[in-house]
Length: 105
Image (tube, rainbow, N blue to C red; front, side, top):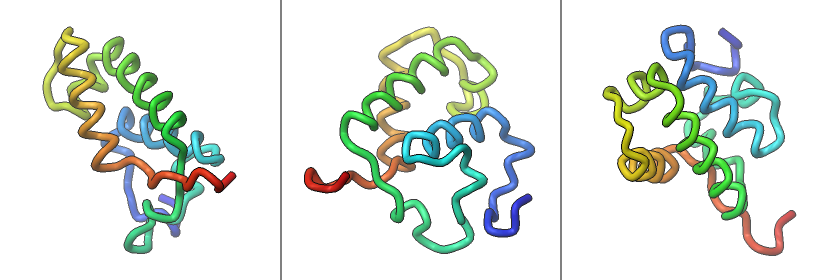
């Protein structure tokens, strides 16, 4: 485990893939590059509404095609895209980055 990253991802590899993708959206190669040891670490990174939508679409498709990821992240499996979209919306609300102001690049 990286010293600046207090999360041990070894038991949740599918969740790590999801957080790696989130990190990539904001310019990192993986979540391991982000210092998660500080409180509020997730408030230091931002994305646009378009980036959030792209991530949510990716996550919906990823979960739809990956039962192991569904079990790890949702605790159950489903073939319903509506249920997955609702779960992804909840995930993004809870764990997503802050929005960039329109004038921020």
